[in-house]
Amino acid sequence: MAPNDDPQWFANGQAYDRYMGRWSRPVGVLFVEWLALPDRLRWIDIGCGTGALCATLIERASPGSVIGIEPSAGFLGVARSMVVDDRVDFRSGDAQDLPLEDDSADVAVSGLVLNFVPDKVRAVREMRRTVRLGGTVAAYVWDYAGGMQLIRHFWDGVSALFPLAAAKDQAELFPICEPQALAALFREAGLQDVETSTMDTPTLFADFDDFWSPFLGGQGPAGAFCASLSDTDRERLRGHLQASLPTRPDGSIHLTARALAVR
Image (cartoon, rainbow, N blue to C red; front, side, top):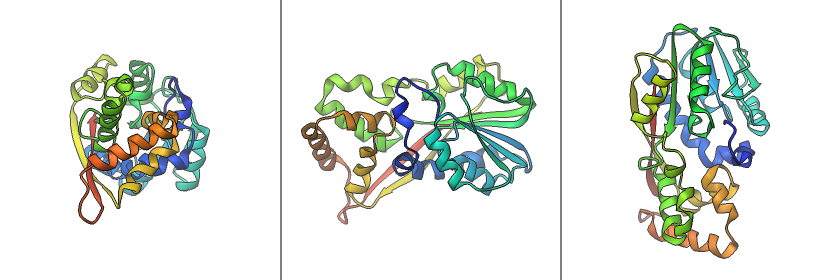
């Protein structure tokens, strides 16, 4: 992931993988299918996290090479253990100042990262700088305001119980997570032929604990807020969510995760 005001949001790669990685993988497949690019290209994955998108590129895009850039040492450790392939090179680096030469790639992508980068225009310009003329720059983020239902239900519960915490809602924190805003960002960074898309994937939870326990890992804004609560308030939130989620007779919870993509 990219740097932010609270680096502990993305410090524990294994906890993040339980919390969000399992849902980012199927969305990454949809993203790569949408790009539909030729084989043997040179790819850069900015903010590669635990390596989910890099793994998808190896499996689905037949790349010539993939460089994964990530500032979190904890995430890099997980990525290197999960994606073992001679074509993949994981490096420490900042999305706003990529440690790469000009025109050194055919494609630069970023999955679920841009909203966390302080200077988003600079980051996209860095992606453009490292890609050859005629290459592709693309990214996707979660639709926190609606279609990413896992997060939406969480913050709706927070707002109901703790109205003063409404400003921490990821829909409020990250207004860039909207199709028109993403397209405007890419155009401001000097990119051409910009288009957007939405991508939905089901998120099936076996029971309420499967939904709730990943928040306790403290990763991302929602997890960090959950960890900041007192035991009493955390239990209040747990009870509210358990009562309000659309639970089926067998205890399972069927939601949808929507990503917004731009290229």
